[in-house]
Image: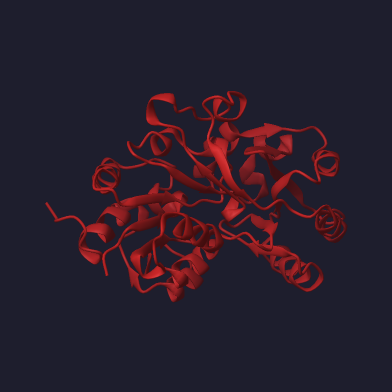
Amino acid sequence: MKIKMIALDLDRTTLNRNGRLSDENRKVLTELLNRGIHVIPASGRSLTSFPQEILTLPGLKYVITSNGAAVYRLPEQENRKSGEDAVTNPTEAPVCLQRFLLNPLTVHSVMELTETEDVTYEVFVDGQAYADPAYIADPTAFGAVKEATAYIQSTRVPVADIREFIREHEDRLDSVDVIVGERKKKEELMQLLREQCPGIYLTTSVEQLIEISDIRAGKHSAVKFLQKLLNIFPEETAAFGDADNDVEMLREAGIGIAVQNASQACMAAADAVTRSCEDDGVAYGIRKILGLIKAE
């Protein structure tokens, strides 16, 4: 069946490890959009954390943010804003089509179970990411890879007391990320949260994060919403990803494709594997696996 929609994870899938969109990926995505195929960036990022080179792709109409907790329709290209302007200029801002906020009681439970541990937090409120200043100053001290430092420092707003900030905004949270520097402790906390917080969508995309959204979220859930909106069947959808937070999206797409650098869980969920994010894996998958664009 003809592919009408392609859902794309961003970091380490469509973007390389330095968070950049290659010329080859940009070229192929632009051609798809020109043909009328819906290209849907689907990310764990907050709205204001989306890179300009993604938001300015000609013809891009929709984005999935915060692991599916919020779906936006972008304004027309000539009126498009990004970064803080996307939130502060309401006449030209993206329109939120669907949002699943965390239940305040769930937030209480998450905090009770984690805040006495050696962890810190980042949270997404109204499309903006906020974080502990210590994490922003040196993300690698909390387990982040060096390549992520510039991205974290340029997209997070520092909050002096992140725990108090979470309590003050408990009814406005798209998602909460628990930042854990030790792998064993991360695994223990994820298991505890699974057992004690049934109302959450729990996932991870990078070493240092436990990513928590409302149970109705998930990239796969947001893709289903857009499929219904655009009258597109699951079998007319392809999806690309690299991490555990892409697993359901790949499983439920007509064809799910993992990049070569993907996690074991993501690989297991995929129907096919393309090249790595450093080797234009998305473009290669679109050309060679999906056959949507002829190889040059």
